[in-house]
Image (cartoon, helix red, strand yellow):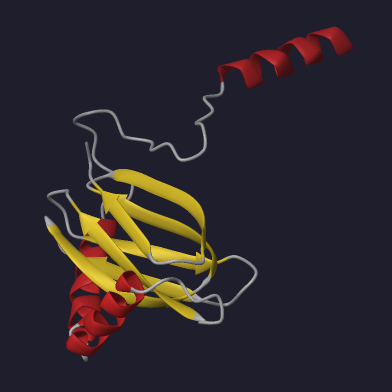
Length: 151
Protein backbone atom coordinates (compact mmCIF):
# COMPACT_ATOMS: atom_id res chain seq x y z
CA UNK A 1 0.00 0.00 0.00
CA UNK A 2 2.88 2.35 0.82
CA UNK A 3 4.48 1.74 -2.56
CA UNK A 4 1.22 2.55 -4.40
CA UNK A 5 0.78 5.74 -2.39
CA UNK A 6 4.43 6.68 -3.00
CA UNK A 7 3.97 6.00 -6.72
CA UNK A 8 0.91 8.27 -6.92
CA UNK A 9 2.69 10.95 -4.94
CA UNK A 10 5.72 10.76 -7.24
CA UNK A 11 3.49 10.88 -10.32
CA UNK A 12 1.66 13.91 -8.91
CA UNK A 13 4.87 15.86 -8.30
CA UNK A 14 6.32 14.96 -11.68
CA UNK A 15 3.20 16.21 -13.46
CA UNK A 16 3.36 19.66 -11.79
CA UNK A 17 4.92 22.48 -13.78
CA UNK A 18 7.52 24.50 -11.94
CA UNK A 19 8.45 27.95 -13.18
CA UNK A 20 11.99 29.18 -12.53
CA UNK A 21 12.33 32.37 -10.45
CA UNK A 22 11.70 35.54 -12.43
CA UNK A 23 9.72 33.80 -15.15
CA UNK A 24 6.33 34.89 -16.41
CA UNK A 25 3.30 32.62 -16.74
CA UNK A 26 1.18 33.36 -19.80
CA UNK A 27 -2.31 32.06 -20.40
CA UNK A 28 -2.72 30.03 -23.59
CA UNK A 29 -3.66 32.20 -26.59
CA UNK A 30 -7.36 32.88 -26.94
CA UNK A 31 -8.17 32.20 -23.29
CA UNK A 32 -9.61 34.99 -21.20
CA UNK A 33 -8.32 35.61 -17.68
CA UNK A 34 -10.07 33.48 -15.06
CA UNK A 35 -11.41 36.56 -13.26
CA UNK A 36 -13.30 38.54 -15.91
CA UNK A 37 -14.17 41.37 -13.49
CA UNK A 38 -10.51 42.08 -12.66
CA UNK A 39 -9.72 44.19 -15.76
CA UNK A 40 -12.70 46.49 -15.07
CA UNK A 41 -11.74 46.93 -11.41
CA UNK A 42 -8.08 47.39 -12.28
CA UNK A 43 -9.02 49.89 -14.99
CA UNK A 44 -10.89 52.12 -12.54
CA UNK A 45 -8.12 51.67 -9.96
CA UNK A 46 -5.59 52.70 -12.63
CA UNK A 47 -7.56 55.89 -13.36
CA UNK A 48 -7.70 56.77 -9.65
CA UNK A 49 -3.98 56.10 -9.20
CA UNK A 50 -3.10 58.22 -12.26
CA UNK A 51 -5.16 61.12 -10.87
CA UNK A 52 -3.28 60.90 -7.54
CA UNK A 53 0.02 60.51 -9.42
CA UNK A 54 -0.40 63.87 -11.17
CA UNK A 55 -0.37 65.76 -7.85
CA UNK A 56 3.08 67.36 -7.39
CA UNK A 57 4.38 65.43 -10.43
CA UNK A 58 7.02 68.04 -11.28
CA UNK A 59 8.44 67.85 -7.75
CA UNK A 60 8.53 64.04 -7.87
CA UNK A 61 10.19 64.10 -11.30
CA UNK A 62 12.87 66.47 -10.00
CA UNK A 63 13.50 64.23 -6.98
CA UNK A 64 13.78 61.11 -9.14
CA UNK A 65 16.24 62.86 -11.47
CA UNK A 66 18.32 63.86 -8.45
CA UNK A 67 18.46 60.22 -7.31
CA UNK A 68 19.36 59.03 -10.82
CA UNK A 69 22.07 61.62 -11.52
CA UNK A 70 23.83 61.55 -8.14
CA UNK A 71 25.77 58.72 -6.57
CA UNK A 72 23.63 56.56 -4.26
CA UNK A 73 23.75 57.78 -0.66
CA UNK A 74 23.47 54.89 1.82
CA UNK A 75 22.08 57.24 4.49
CA UNK A 76 19.09 58.26 2.32
CA UNK A 77 15.88 56.43 3.21
CA UNK A 78 14.33 56.91 -0.22
CA UNK A 79 15.34 56.41 -3.83
CA UNK A 80 13.90 56.87 -7.29
CA UNK A 81 12.12 54.34 -9.48
CA UNK A 82 11.57 54.68 -13.22
CA UNK A 83 9.27 52.09 -14.78
CA UNK A 84 8.89 51.80 -18.55
CA UNK A 85 5.81 50.03 -19.87
CA UNK A 86 6.44 48.77 -23.42
CA UNK A 87 3.14 46.88 -23.58
CA UNK A 88 -0.17 47.98 -25.11
CA UNK A 89 -1.95 47.80 -21.73
CA UNK A 90 -2.05 50.17 -18.77
CA UNK A 91 -0.40 48.47 -15.81
CA UNK A 92 -0.19 48.85 -12.06
CA UNK A 93 3.08 47.75 -10.46
CA UNK A 94 2.40 46.57 -6.92
CA UNK A 95 5.37 46.78 -4.54
CA UNK A 96 4.85 45.07 -1.19
CA UNK A 97 7.55 45.45 1.43
CA UNK A 98 9.07 42.25 2.76
CA UNK A 99 9.29 42.52 6.57
CA UNK A 100 7.73 46.00 6.42
CA UNK A 101 4.34 47.60 6.03
CA UNK A 102 5.22 49.53 2.86
CA UNK A 103 2.85 49.04 -0.07
CA UNK A 104 3.01 50.97 -3.34
CA UNK A 105 0.59 50.76 -6.26
CA UNK A 106 2.35 52.49 -9.13
CA UNK A 107 0.41 53.23 -12.37
CA UNK A 108 2.26 53.21 -15.70
CA UNK A 109 0.34 54.05 -18.90
CA UNK A 110 0.77 51.86 -22.00
CA UNK A 111 3.81 52.63 -24.17
CA UNK A 112 5.03 55.13 -21.59
CA UNK A 113 7.23 55.70 -18.54
CA UNK A 114 6.42 56.88 -15.05
CA UNK A 115 8.68 57.77 -12.14
CA UNK A 116 8.21 57.55 -8.41
CA UNK A 117 10.00 58.13 -5.12
CA UNK A 118 9.95 55.00 -2.94
CA UNK A 119 11.52 53.91 0.35
CA UNK A 120 14.57 51.67 0.10
CA UNK A 121 14.07 48.06 1.15
CA UNK A 122 13.16 44.51 0.09
CA UNK A 123 10.05 44.31 -2.06
CA UNK A 124 7.89 41.85 -3.91
CA UNK A 125 6.91 43.31 -7.29
CA UNK A 126 3.74 42.09 -9.00
CA UNK A 127 1.80 43.18 -12.04
CA UNK A 128 -0.61 41.96 -14.70
CA UNK A 129 0.80 42.90 -18.11
CA UNK A 130 -1.87 42.27 -20.76
CA UNK A 131 -2.83 38.97 -19.09
CA UNK A 132 0.75 37.89 -18.26
CA UNK A 133 1.66 37.85 -14.59
CA UNK A 134 4.92 39.53 -13.56
CA UNK A 135 6.44 38.59 -10.21
CA UNK A 136 9.85 39.45 -8.82
CA UNK A 137 11.61 40.11 -5.53
CA UNK A 138 14.12 42.93 -5.34
CA UNK A 139 16.31 44.56 -2.71
CA UNK A 140 16.05 48.21 -3.70
CA UNK A 141 18.99 50.19 -2.32
CA UNK A 142 19.77 52.24 -5.44
CA UNK A 143 17.57 53.87 -8.07
CA UNK A 144 15.42 51.28 -9.84
CA UNK A 145 15.00 51.29 -13.61
CA UNK A 146 12.54 48.63 -14.76
CA UNK A 147 11.41 47.92 -18.34
CA UNK A 148 8.35 45.72 -18.80
CA UNK A 149 6.71 44.37 -21.95
CA UNK A 150 4.32 41.59 -22.88
CA UNK A 151 6.69 40.02 -25.45
